[in-house]
Image 1 (cartoon, rainbow, N blue to C red):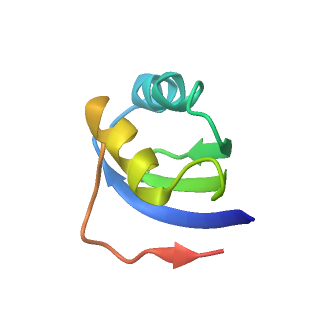
Image 2: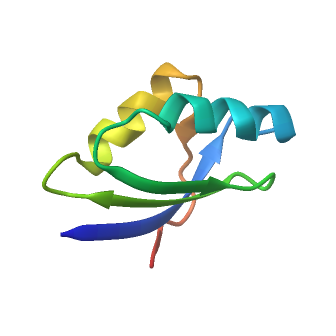
Length: 75
């Protein structure tokens, strides 16, 4: 089943950071879409039969990006 969520992420300060995050996530199996903005909001869409929210967050953390304590928005 396709799941969608928008999260707040630290580590995004410039357009280059957005591109680096895209590079980190582009090969993550099961991730259908990921869009980030300079305010640190990242919209994710993933197939929960192929990956999990935790696996995506772990991949982001390995790239230097962490979910902050801000509000998570379900889409």
